[in-house]
Image 1: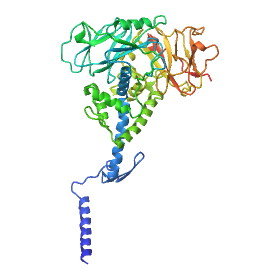
Image 2: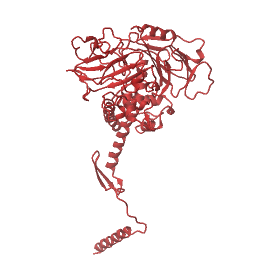
Image 3: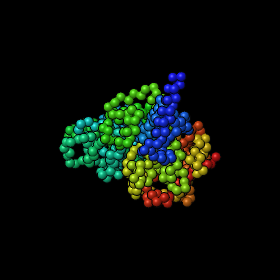
Image 4: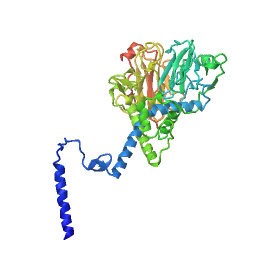
Length: 499
């Protein structure tokens, strides 16, 4: 009887308390959409349970796994440029020491080298600069297209035709981060935000011969500390034509280790706080060991799969109109709005940035600026005129209209969709340009270029070979572009399926 009385008393107190709570003086009607139910059904996370807005333990675990996955995918797409530069560094240093070695493709680059979207006509040369406490001098060759990008893949300088040396060659002085010493006259001075730098330059063939450009580099190119300006050390020039080495970043979860290597070796102020924050959210923090546990490693593995799918889709099948080069065509341009910073209207174009760094290398304003008669311009195609992805077992035709708006020449090069390097077939150089001997030109001055597994009858000199078991994409390049290219008045046709 006593227990029943106590129970009745507690029931009355409870009822009274609830009634009191519901009639508190400061009570307010809560607008719709602020409070959540104690059980939420999420399409992506399933059932999520709360106690008056506070998650239960199993819900907390689900939510943090999802947050880590989102951050890891974000780190992949926002950090892909960092991994790309680290892979470039490793590839170059696999062939020789930093500051001492210049790699030269003396017989041009072919498909044996894994190198993002290189071409078959330029004379590629590259080196890795590693700064210490004192400034370093770079003596550059004449008449090249040269770029210096830092370890975070940020633009530092142009040299050559589009540089301050105005194609004459010159002495560039690169100041290390936080340098406070004296800066002598007589140099093109650039302040660095990282210690590591990629130096890349392209020379030009003379009547089909790359050696004039090669010799000019061997005679002039040097890297040395400012303190050794009166007695510069000799450079080691390595001919890497036909050599097998890799400069391409990983696409699996090892990409996070490539990113971490840069974060650990470079000053944080060289990269944006937004990207560093995203990386920090998954454990990539300068001065700290990046050692994901089993749970986090599983999340990174999954995030890399999603990240890889995202960047491949953004590049090959973009949904943003600004990533298309010419209206109403399949030609693409990830350098949207002519911005090498991937910016427009105050916004960062994240899809353009991640697509570009997945696909290509080299950041310079010259790639996107309207510079009449100098440099090179690009258009990329993954699909035929109907929007169907190129099939290596089929043959396609591109039509090049007469009177290309150029001072120099045009070219096609085809690439493996997986590696974004030159497609490996029986042809050493999977490309073609209008300087090729025997290239057939139509009576009206136009050209027809065929890309497929076999050359159409009588068109072998106008043909690039594909692998029937591989997909491919292509870049059309115009060297020394003129007004009509920039105005969109002249461009090659979309590809038409021949068979």
